[in-house]
Length: 463
Ligand code: URP
Ligand code: ZN
Ligand code: ZN
Image (cartoon, rainbow, N blue to C red):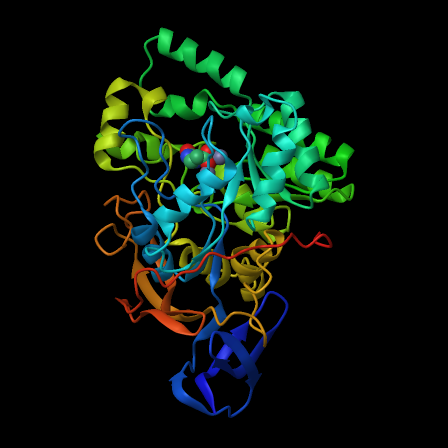
């Protein structure tokens, strides 16, 4: 007798679909088969049963200085994730100057532990401070790996940005240690030039956020970092891709045999620059970096995930309150804090406009949102429905129609740039290591039930 059996569902993995029961013992999947007996049974007839979503790019309590902190904390963010069918998230550690890796880790861990309602790992940021003394970079990478963190974010923008030599050395150190570098690829110097010119010309409108960040410069930055990764023979993932020029850079590198991967996010699949023309603060809501683009580019992102030119749909979830967006807007487009909420709508929206519309297979959906992010980021017991894997399971109703609204979403910011978006397909039940977190729109989890996942490496065979 198993602890829990989900009966009669359509089980979807990245590489197969079967009609079967799935049984859970303790925290793990114990069996997949017919007529499995359970102390507790859930009937999933007519439903899809998929691995819990894995969102390998979220910002929780991101501190941009002073009062500018992203609005979802570790409880509100992970609870929203669970409502949306995501059971593993990866936020960030940014060790400040003068802080050891262990101190930075403990600080962030204290923010998360006791509050998270899904499992989580961390990305470690390698900033310019890692180059301020001999051996510092190597120590940072070694100490990070010892803490079970195998993914490192390298920025080519903002104050954390690395110059070319630093970028090369960071990629090399991470690659040699068996980790994965994830990259924010933009050309900061040229963006700064164009922003300064626009500001000097008196431009303030949010539309200038996109106009000052030409897609072709983003592609140039991505090509540069991929050239370095190719030379060093180390894997690399470009984060938040929203235009065809960058997707083509990834696709071309992969054709050459480079272990290059690309992530896109719902904002690039559902929003266009038209959103900047919305009234007042609504036009500031969609400001994020890299920016959302034209309708043509939006459609190109759907083609890219269908063609495997891009391999992951994560979210870059990073909303700020209406007040913070308003304060930024009052100073001009360059001061609007960047980021949108997408964590809760990711799984259902990609199903609806990808699978239900006929563009993606259900397996491709699971590959993009669960299996590939888990495997590439070293979560070796996540993202797959098979005995021995964590019993992170989502029961998904493929026929339920609903409309996205801030009124019903659980993210804390109180707004969504997807207001009114109609979806076919909804998360019904989210299970984390055998425990129900949400069911039928009700939260039934416990604050703190999520667990830190210590990772030992990434799958070097991944292509
Ligand atoms: O505008 C965005 N995306 N903010 C989050 C930070 C980042 O660059 O990923
Ligand atoms: Zn970024
Ligand atoms: Zn981000």
